Image 1: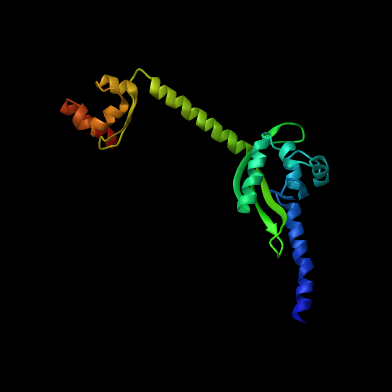
Image 2: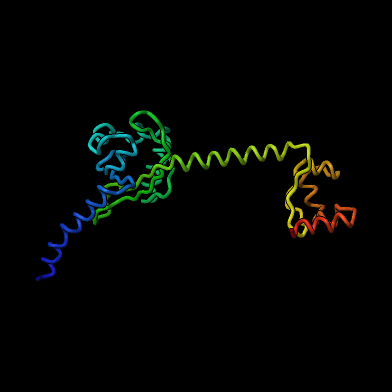
Length: 212
């Protein structure tokens, strides 16, 4: 069997493998023009955007930037980056589904070129990260709520190492100890045990509590 024949026989198998992977992938896979028009999508991409099939998606969406992106400026930025770098990684954007609801999508894509370097198409993947985005948003809100409580509390709140090194303090603690601000307090008090506790027994209690 010649090398040419082996290559010819191996080609359909390779194409079949790619087609199977493309069609059955749980992640959205797509090809588009450099200007943002779908050329090919798999079923996962169609489901992601709320369409019944890739055919329905491609016939309905002829302008990805203006029809899919909630903020078209995000789509324009995506195209600008991929034209500039030839590849884009972990690009997050909010997109519309067919029913008008919005989801958060993570995109990774690259430009495929021919042997002369001309652009053939953009190929990439799309993942729904809406739940992850919601969880991160909830965490940011919780952190902001804690920060406001920390900053506005009338009680002194601080963080210190087991050895007594002062790590952080809120404005109330600074006022209690006679300092103008938490920064002023942290700059002057290196060790809360030796510099703040006047009673030696209290110092020992601090270390005891830190060890238990």
